[in-house]
Image (cartoon, rainbow, N blue to C red; front, side, top):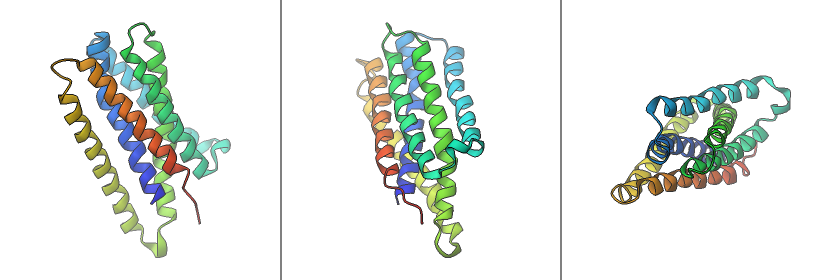
Length: 187
């Protein structure tokens, strides 16, 4: 359960931030969509880097530690990306923070799959894999739906504040992932 909870929360937090960060950059910073795409690409590139480091860097050999560290990096990176809503903050800081979030999810996401399958009792890999996928979709879609309803309340009066609030909500979900990651035990 801790592994599924961590996986669901870290995936939902990253997706919630990834969906709302473009709103924040367009509405709050008046960035063109090409620039917003470049910001999101930084997270995709570091996601790949995190997965490669997780698989090949011996210092990240402990899978549970890797998931815990990754969850913390996702939370910190998303928290830093909320700075995109503060025009006085140089844009490079939230972009770098988004890269940190990407690095964290790259370390966490594939590793959590391995941990769930390792914990599958008596060869119940299909059941565990199904639970993993269903968990991903249900948690992420629920968080996105709740966030969208919340954003609807801000659209007419304060859309930038609404986008900041949703990215902040993503931080809260990522912190929840960090808490559940602390409970992961391997057999």
